[in-house]
Length: 472
Image 1 (spheres, rainbow, N blue to C red):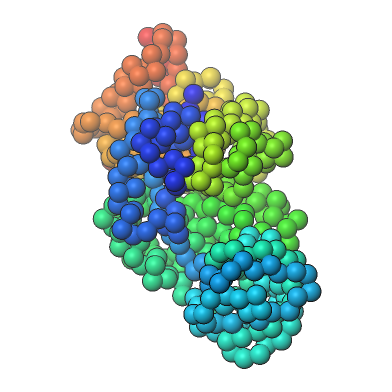
Image 2: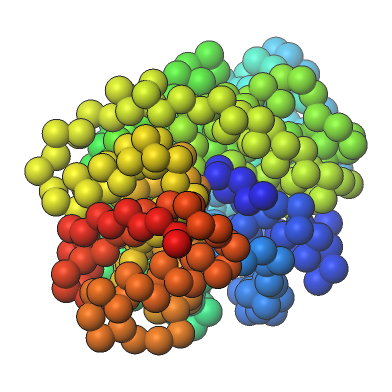
């Protein structure tokens, strides 16, 4: 059984072997994430090829891969030796290429610290260490006090909770990976630390026509101020709860997650929930009850995808983590209520013919108990619209393009069939799709299938035909 909510696995040392990757696919992974913060430009083509060659065991299922750009991630310089920061200690934070020391932490990725002010909060190591600015010493140095201490052994990440560092929308490192993306042709690219819709537009212009799907990672408070515009400009969003929770009061994170899921659902954009979903399984063979509940609620709220990070990249139990996540998804999906879900969607009154056709198809699935909902599609657009309405039957995109089939993977409940022919009419296209589905699903007389298509064959956005067929 292919989960309706898709599982994304992050590739790393724990799974970077063909047999382990294939086991992850067998366990339920549909999409792989290549984190460019940890895979160098010279290694990326090899890793990408390894993932691209994976094959799914089930019919209709393809394997997708996306690149996650590094973005402006800040880290302190390597300490000379482990630094133990204690509560109430006073140290300096300085722009420098020197190694960090017990009384002076250094970082070199910023031009200055003038964006900080007295009482500004600074967090390190995903919030485990908290500092507060006491004094602005100069443009490149501030004195801080330790609010919550901890040990620093390596180049820990540093984040500025209530201030915005002066960084470019696209870093030099991002540019390197974007150039590589033009050669490798991933199915999607995730933009880190998105702050505005214009930032998304810049990257889309750089990638040009036939660009991969664009995923905007929501990691900063500033993104929430322009969230509708950012979602409109993106193909999907990722709720990156680790960094997002550092720039918000912790207790607000669940509410923001629910709001972002609902917004993406309403706009027919896919939404990925990420960070610490089963993090205890990095070391333990089973998750905590709280983690199980977290994944369950993400699925119930309407997430298209849920993502594993360290669990598969560096964890001791990558395959087990995927298996557990699949079981949770299947259980949560079994209680999904279409009537409750559809009342959330704000745009049911849309005048789009394609959207009205998609809604009618989803409603018909519940009325008739159909075995499949087939979308004859050139771009995946009709699949995206149908997925938004969460039909009771499997969604199958029928397309000529393998690239489109892989992009379809990101949407809830959607899989694909790659057609090896060019139809000469809309009728032939639907006939071929129906025959293929009947054969591959082993349908029997009396089974029903819904097929969506358009009068203008292979024209994007022309979906206007809803056909209900019964196997004879």
